[in-house]
Image (cartoon, rainbow, N blue to C red):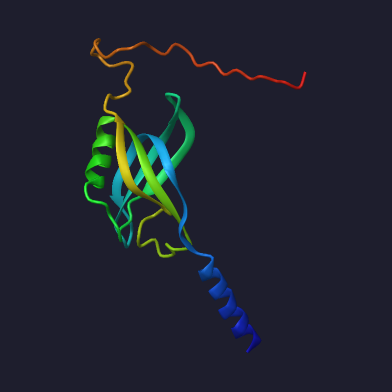
Amino acid sequence: MKKLILIVSTILLFASCSSENYSAGERIGLVTQFSRSGMFYKSWEGHLNLTQTGMNSSVPFDFSIDNDNEPPGLVSVLDSAANYGWKVKLTYHETFNKNWFKNRGETDHFVTSCVVLDRKPLSLFSGDSTHRQGKVIDTIYVIIDKSK
């Protein structure tokens, strides 16, 4: 009987700690992958390369569109952003312990809106010279050591 009470109280504690809106925020970058996937539950999944001051970050952001609450028009904007290389701002919320069976999406980050920030593709080496703004020669990393 003690084990049953312990199991039930653990489950209730675990369920009470769950949150639909564990965190929320915005991410800016380029959508590099956007597809409909899933073994049992098909959902829209994407990959965003984050940008900071015009440079790509090494930290990726994987996101889903909630199967239970899909905003109208969001799929078409994200698909166009992935195909044309647009810079976008995604607004999302993260769930905690609310997507056990992955029926809402593969990740716990659900995009609620997408704003296109720049429709020009970031291509420095395109054949069209009117859109060429420069060329990358080398990347330099500077390390500042303040201990000395």
